[in-house]
Length: 198
Ligand SMILES: C[S@@+](CC[C@H](N)C(=O)[O-])C[C@H]1O[C@@H](n2cnc3c(N)ncnc32)[C@H](O)[C@@H]1O
Image (cartoon, rainbow, N blue to C red):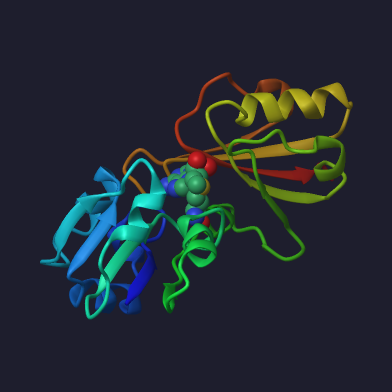
């Protein structure tokens, strides 16, 4: 059986009991170095780095074996779970995790209701479309992050507040609430929430 297990935004305290249970019975666990480190105390399974070419996962023998693929946050929110569902014809189990976006809203004590969720990973978002929404949450990459998003808001003369959550649930966590013209050029791994200024 192939299971994609969401391990939350970083801190192992946010792992669900279901995720821990699946990890405990796993034969092999695939993940990034950081992810494998995070779950190292939970499972005695063989740990393997996720191959650079994900397609190689398809050749891993999984008949009669419990194979786990780790996903940061939630597997189906811009995560590897979506790739696995598209590429495996055999039965796949998806174990939900707490996403970085969910974590961010809880840190800000802001309702998630009616939020438009998107990503800048490997694509240029349609800013005209997304900035029409009164509440937007984005996972970002190093090319289009808080600064680039802020510039798009300034270009359009919109009245918005930007929240940036860096390294959520880790010891380096930082939450910023800024006007677009105050957003710095560089932040660590982050989630951005954009809301209309009231
Ligand atoms: C490929 S996406 C995966 C999102 C993940 N599936 C989720 O539900 O959070 C990776 C992006 O998620 C965000 N992210 C993941 N963990 C984070 C954390 N601990 N703090 C801030 N942002 C995080 C960052 O924008 C990062 O570039």
